[in-house]
Amino acid sequence: MKTQSGAIERLEQSGVKPSMQRIAIMGYLMDNLTHPTADNVFNGLSSSIPTLSKTTVYNTLKLLARQGAILELTIDDKNVRYDANIFLHAHFRCKLCGSVYDLPVGSFKAMTVKAIDGFTITERQLYYKGYCKRCSAKAEKNGA
Ligand SMILES: [Zn+2]
Ligand SMILES: [Zn+2]
Image 1: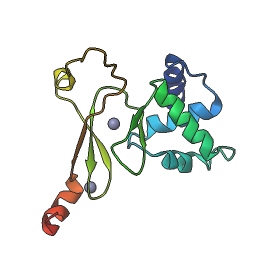
Image 2: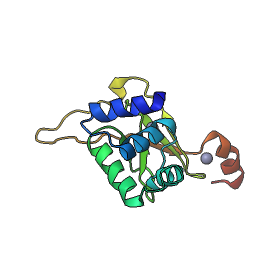
Image 3: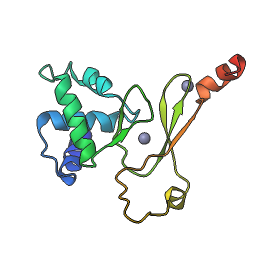
Image 4: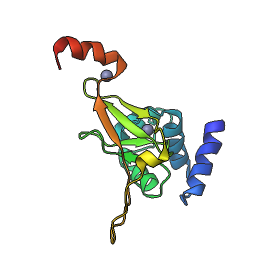
């Protein structure tokens, strides 16, 4: 299984001990680059891992984000979302359907800000909002 070995590798690189459940959660995120919520991850895995608890999923996602194995996105104010794509990219959230899409960043310079003395940046997120392709026509009609 390609995803599984990739998941183990990502965990080890991030200093996370690869337990069976951690590998499954990491693998799920690598297979589903749609920015799933913790509930999505739980629902996606609970049938194949009946012993998996929601708490384990939440705690594992927090751990993976803290260790830099995944990104934690707060673009959606109701649900925290998770992203196995840890390369620099921006996010776009559709205001109508709520889907979160990846936006490629044109150049690394575009994401560069001037450092401020004494400030430590621990997180960097670039968000855009609007209407996705599917919803644009609908939004126009409703004058949204
Ligand atoms: Zn949409
Ligand atoms: Zn993303």
